[in-house]
Image (cartoon, rainbow, N blue to C red):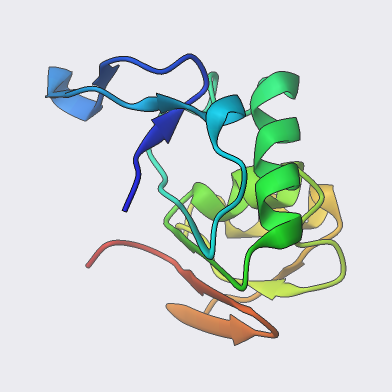
Length: 120
């Protein structure tokens, strides 16, 4: 298992929790499983360079999954165009802005992906 972020290095999570070292997304050649986590701040994961890396890795992944608002990142990258997906209840309808099909279920499985509405 590998953990990655746009620029690599430590990542500050919600409530100031710092996750240790991550690799740069651009340094990862491929992923069998791509997991995109969510969170309240989508400013970093919706940057064009981040979305390009997610789209690149998703293209070769056997399985794609997300938790919470991570599905918005996948949708913004074009990965969920025309596909059903769950998302955090407050943002689920925003999926349609990116061509995804919002599904209010807590869990949606579609093709090679599994998308959860939250971590609970």
